[in-house]
Amino acid sequence: MSKKHKQKIHHQRHHSQPKKTWFYANITLAVMLIIAGIGLLFWQGNQSSSKNVAIAATRPAGQIGLPAPNFNLLSPTGESITLSDYEGQVVLVNMWATWCPPCKAELPDINAFYEVHKDEGFTVLAINIQEDEGTVDAFIQAKGFHFPVLLDIRGEVMNLYQAPGLPTTYIIDRNGVIQHIQTGAITKQQLEAIIEPLLTEL
Image (tube, rainbow, N blue to C red; front, side):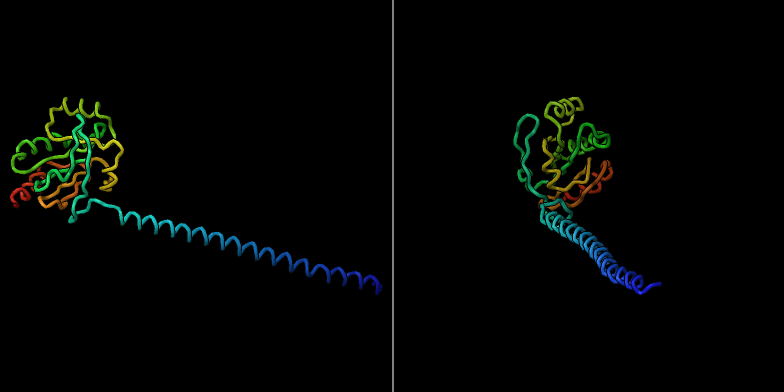
């Protein structure tokens, strides 16, 4: 191999070395940027979750042992009814809908219990969730229920109480404190066991 040829090979190796270094440096930088980007996304997600939890924690919510959040809704006939109107009474707040089978199953027992105990300082506020007054009124009339019915057209009270679904029942004592939350249909036996002792407390 001639001296000139050796010098040419050396020159090629000398120039290819910085190119390799530059290539690996760029790869390393790209990987670092990707990792940083992923980390930033996770951080933003955690921040968002923390913010949402904080917002939820500050919202009025129906919880056992705490005062029931007040609300005002209209009946199918346009009457304005407020929870605080029933101060000093035991109140069963039931969230329901006409399309909900467990709701329809429990309402006869709720109505029967209401009829027996309404003169003892007990009332039912049956809050229909997001149905129109015509649908609700026709259903109530057909079933012959006599408890007060309210319309939560936009689901605001359901959100206020953070009800997980339908039906959900809140039993509130004479002091306005929630004593029981029932998710799913409530039975006649539960109504008697939970509410009757509250009616004797003055």
